[in-house]
Length: 148
Image (tube, rainbow, N blue to C red):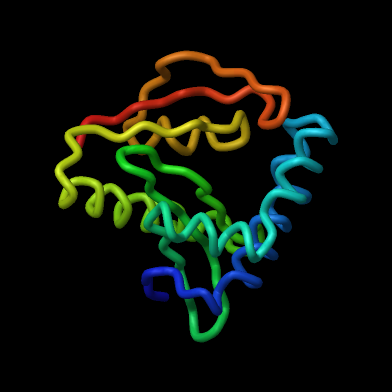
């Protein structure tokens, strides 16, 4: 497996990966309307548009995209790993890589909006809870922070 920058031609696979995670994993912790909003938001064209504003990385094995993460300033977003590959440290490797990118870009700390689903994962990586956030579209999330 290697981690590389997102390319436009990855958009369909990244969209499918995020949608798979939403349906199979996040749906256990979130209402259907939140999952539907996020599912409909994460189209290939939206991901391409997002790639112009953020740094997006993908974890790839041959031609299979196993996971993704993005960085917008000092905010880490859209961390997803194919459920078939959970427990194989792919998420940890993506987080290490994006934290290093943030550090190289001059960030002293990073923040992220954690789902309830991923909260324990981020805690194990050294993130601390700052506050609870709520939006009708994204549901309840936990703002977390880590010094780099």
